[in-house]
Image: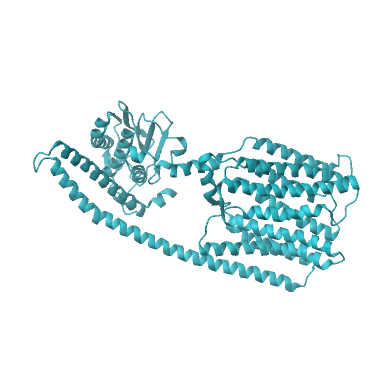
Length: 594
């Protein structure tokens, strides 16, 4: 399962549908044509008629892109349903623009309300339903409360802007019929609901499969809301005319919808369930949105109040109070969540310490006794064993040794993480380190039919000999393990500036380029089946790198799939003292920052 998740994560990051670049270029070209028409008015006909006619193609492209996206992800019911509702919303807007174009181009009149308005208004609930269809991960009570407060802050901030610029003035202006007033108020109210849904999408974790398209949909919705607010404000003050630059925002809105549909990649057969169940927050900076909305809202409100105050100052004060209360309560909930998280971390640290205590004393001591007793049996101290019994004892000895290595690895990695591993660096001949390491691994190499070779320059390094031998044994053991019978594993030491460069090269299957760094993580292996087929725990390489880095060295891997691998690390030469004679290892977290 973990391997499949890694493949899914990689596919989600790099997959790009065929035709995305072409669609992007085509839409950019259309936007440039539209802007050039607005600037130079080079298309014959009235601006109202040409503006309406130019909106229809981009609306249709967005609708078609959303519908095609729903077909590409049809194997996933959730993704398919999401894109179908997006297509329905865009289709309603397309029909509305087409009807409005008929009024302006054919009938040469534009009544209000008109038959286009029901389709325009249908866009809001359809898009709202689509956004609410997005699957979100389950949240804790504190995280759910914080997300709700964040969404409420965004809605109040954005809603205040809509209220001051459009909704309130429309309600107070009067002079319209009941139906016209209802339609005029419905548009800004729809924007507020869309803003609420968008806030939920941004603040909660959404499916990874929708990560890239959702960014574009977010841009589209924001452009639509801004365009609606500017349009309403322009209508109230008599500054808007059809074909105005505000219409460019609508063109950009539906261009973004079209790109989102084209960007949606079809999930592979094995990713259908994983792609919709796994989730991530759309942006790591989403937590700043509530504060940003407060700043924007207050800035716009103060500007509106100075320019043309529609309402008494008390309304502004009330909005500020509501925003302040929401932010304060949100901070309280965040602080409570932080305290609970810290308590959980302390509890987990306590459990880890108890586990290490059990491993270090209650498990390792009897394990050593068992290993010794099995060794005596295998050695014939109590008499020669039958062949079957001898084979069973040999298997038991191998497994107790493997369990003992696992216990030691766990203790070593935790000591390194805590910075409690004391090193004793002294001047030591690199050839001695190489010779000792090869002696430890020689029996394993002989059993595997692998030849060990070395080529060591006359160098003296500053190192804790036992720990460096441990690191080299880990590297040589891995090289032998993954080399075919008859292969050669080479260990070389050569000078490199003020360091000695150790290299362990094998002729095995190699390591994919995207795994060269991941293999140094705890319990990570190139393939999930390696733990079963080759043995090992996935701790050898992290321990080896930790030992080297605590000697002020560096370790890395070089490989090409099918051409073997080379693991290299550096150690300081013994000469000018760059480390004290006795040093305590730094925690791995500090080493990662060096």
